[in-house]
Amino acid sequence: MGRKTTGAEPAGDKVALVAHPRAARSIRRLRARAGLLGLVLVTFLSLRAGLPAFDAVLRGLVGGIAAQFVAWAAGVMVWRQLVLGEIIAYRDAQREAAQARAEAAAERVAAARG
Image: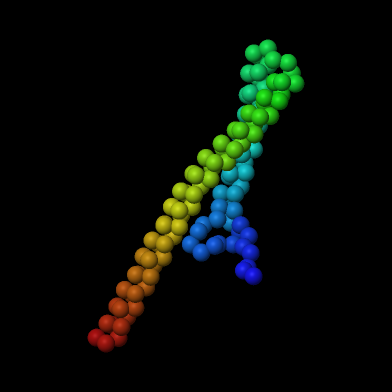
């Protein structure tokens, strides 16, 4: 049987946001705030529209759940791009460092021969 992978383990070339500490925290915080804001806003608007309290709270819960899913999707889209940018910047920095080391080594060899 194949080995099962968890969300924290990289699977090939894929980047898991679960393994990125800032992304996971930020998405979790965004979902919570959006859910609460959706709940309060929809409940308030429903009560102002004259709905009974039970119906207003029920609509508020549905609105909070919907806002939470929308915020999660938006957060994942944004953080995928941010993590991709971080990976590209890290790769470029590694290439520049390797090139600088190679040039320094070539200069040392030329100085030793010269």
